[in-house]
Structure formats: structure tokens, C-alpha cells
Length: 262
Image (cartoon, rainbow, N blue to C red):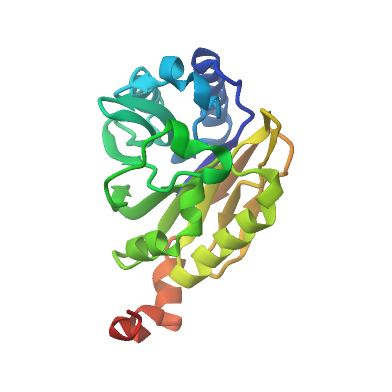
């Protein structure tokens, strides 16, 4: 299953320009790499222009959902659509969208954990639903957003449902880049799953973002990693037969004793 991850710089406060930028990248990447799945970063339509989201956010996922659906069906490609600022009746959410290669929305998720360090709770509403499993090409997958990575319960709950690939979409700051790297490797090892991440680069409002988008295998080996400063396309094919093999060779899930963890 071939992946192409877009490590992009985001044009602050200009959703139209960012959609055009993503469209050009998708057109080029599909032609050059022919991936099965593309992955976008967190809040890629607006960046962290939190004070302006009341006027910049999508409304009930539009127009970005239709934009992604059209690209998916046109190119016959699955899209892990990063996340967007999404205005609903009761607030603005940080919402992820997953589209299959026929242009169908198969999963949506609102970020549960809002980042105090970036002032998210002041402007955004936290998600109210649990993370869930979705499938593309018959493969069980899960998705979390940025700060969610610090809460291992989310990844473990997905692993217990046989998820093989965990996607992490992010705008993770350079100030905590070593945490970004270490936590992804930890999630891969402890859950014996692939971790595929898309993180932005660039700066906004005095915050530098760390890039280092990654593809990590279930042993914790970093197969590919982006730089900390450049726009890049990270391409890697995942050998999914490795997941059940590792889970058999090191049977952590059958060794668990949950009644002693409470």
C-alpha cells in the first residue's frame, strides 16, 4: 500500500490558496508516484489563525469536503484529508476527513484533546466522540490529530481493534520536536502498528513548526522522515504482512492483564 505524505507550508488565513496548492501537489504526485493513499497535515486550509476562524472556517465541512471528494474520485485515490477548522452549530471543531478512492466520506473525527500551549481551548470545541476504526482497501486504520499523540490510550484502543496503520496529522512545533519523534516511535512499538504522520513546516505568529513527517514500521524503525524545514513529499510502500507477523512473534496483546491495570 503506497503512501504519499505532503509535508507542506501553509498560507495563513487563505483557504482558497491552500486548496489550490494541495490540488497542484495532488495532480503532480499522482502522476509521478501513483500512490494508493495521500496524507495531508492538520488545519491545512487556514493554519493556526485561531482568532480569524469564525470567518475562515468551513461550515459543516464545506467547501473542503467536496473539494477532497472531487479529487479522490477524479484520481481514483484514497485521501487522509488532514484536518480543517470546521464550524458546526455548537462551535468550531478541528475536524479530520477520510475519503475513499470513489469519493465517499468514510470517516470523520473531531480532535478530542485541545492544545493549551497554542490557545486552542479558547477558540475551538473539543470532540465528543471516541476515535474509531475505518478501512481502506480492506485494511483497518485509525487517525489522531497532533496533541492526541500524547495520550497513548487512543492508539491502544485502536490497536485492540486490530488497526494496522495509525495516521497522525499535525502542526507540531519545533520547540517540542524531540517529543514528536519519540512519541510516534513509542506508539508504533507499543501497538505493533505502522505510524504515518504529516506535519507542517514554516512559521506563524512566532511559532516554528517542525516538519519531520514520518513513516514508522511496527518495530519502531523510521523508514522515511522529512526534514525540519522544507516542503517535501514522503513516499513509502507499507508491507502490511509485517503487522500480524510481529504481533505473533512478540504477543503483547495476549500477554496483557487489563484487570491489574486499573
